[in-house]
Amino acid sequence: MRRVPQLLVLAFSACCVARDPQESLRQEVLRTAERYATFEWRAVAANAMHGLDPDGVRVDTPDVGFDPEGWRADGSANRGMPYAWGGFTSIEEFRTGLTKGLFAGLVPASERARASRHALGLDCSGYVARCFDLPVKQTTRSLGDLCIELDGYEALLPGDLLNKYDSHVALFIDWTDSSCRWMRVWEAARLGAKESVYDASKAKQEGFVPLRYRLLDSHWQPMDDASLGAPTWRADPAAPAGKFSGSVIEDVRLDDRPLGGSAAGAWVRYSVREGGTAVSKRTLLAATVGENIGLQCVEDIGGKLLPTGRSVAKTQSLPEVLRDLLAFHEPLDIRHVAEHTVERGSWELGRRRFSARRHTLKVVAETTVRHQTHTAWLDITAILSDDVPLGRVVVAEFTLAIDWQMRGRREHARRLDTTVVLEAFGAGR
Image 1 (cartoon, one colour):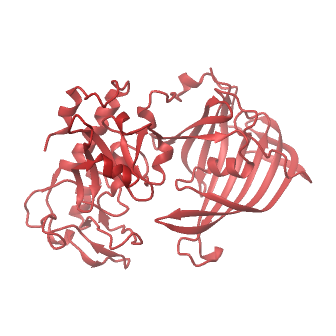
Image 2 (cartoon, rainbow, N blue to C red):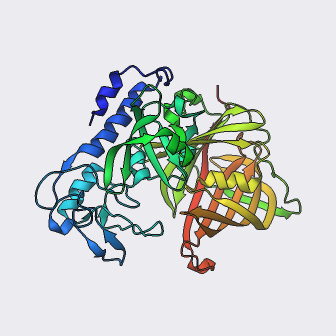
Image 3 (cartoon, helix red, strand yellow):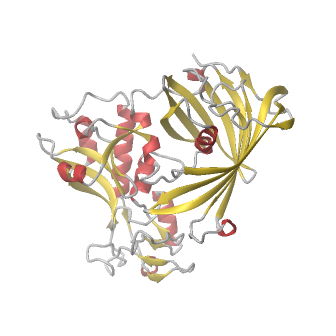
């Protein structure tokens, strides 16, 4: 096996594009990928499992009892992070977990299998998320928002992705031949993180899409305070929480296209709470505006960044804007709006009174995971004001319930409560 650091000094063949300006980050991504695929560890019999875990989840660890090429529990050195369905384990967490008798990996019996909280390791998208140093695990469905799609395989650079939606993802290393037919990749597949060789023509036929992580894209605009410029308004942390007063009106179509007046460079920043606990800061920037808005979003979760983005229509409806603001990390498609009422009045926040409208919506939606479609119910209360330059949202409260068990009733669905509160906004530079 050729070691990845050697790649960093290679001249790319004619099929590759010019040197990427985010080269240092690419190097770090590749170093991390190699570290997870090559680190050494030792296991004992307690780290192997072929049966039900304490929660009743079927676990088959990828040891020699499962596959002759699997890891060993005889005290000899094993190499690389083992595969674990739904896994997002760091190397440090892995070493600690082994000493506690947790299971080293989990190979699922099918795509309908459950993940086990007693298993250590990485699945394919968890591996990529670790390589990008992301704060939360991703899936092959959510990676599209963290990346841009490349024009073709010939544009791939080391650290880019080959992603098959709702299936598998691999990290591109380099081409092994001048004709750009064979490529080397890092991936977490079946037994563990490893280097593999892909046939490009076969990968295309199977639907693997070339992607580039947004922070590796030269068009990504920085979204720190220095880049955004001084805010037009910022909430006073000592000021009391907001309060709405108003009356119901008839025109539910009010604010139906809240992105319509957005200008390039406009930005907003929100604090995000789940169940009353602060979980992140979220900044949105209108990077470009034409018929569509190039919307960038950076979520700061525990000091680590989750950069996402998408091109959205200026005609996007209010339910769609609010759904995107929720930033649910699985695609959520709106089926229909069951109820919608509007009140006109004012909202006090940060010692400022906003002329505002309060929208109350009940939305029926769906999300598709592992080729299965699950019903979701989304209740939203949102305060909108024309003073806010991007989307108009001052405050939004969400209750999301997803019928993961497909029992057809909301009371059996898993519930998540999220509140998004405006902290600052500006016109940009």
